[in-house]
Image (cartoon, rainbow, N blue to C red):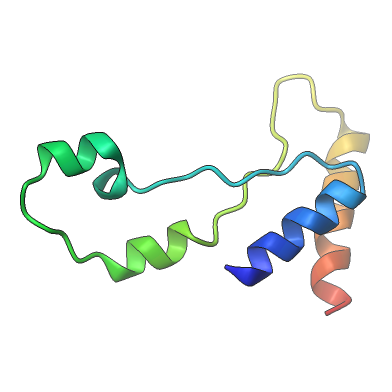
Length: 79
């Protein structure tokens, strides 16, 4: 989770709009309301806490894709 935050900061410093916004269904307000049994899904919660959404949209250019990949790769190789 700490690594996710550091990666998001690194992306932001390099003008890459990466975000975190995934909440597992069972943890959402609706999920808690519909599922009265308490669910223990540690793998789901672990993975959800580490997901990063990188820029992906119809008009993204090859140059922009290379830039995103380069920034992410730079983060992990400089650790």
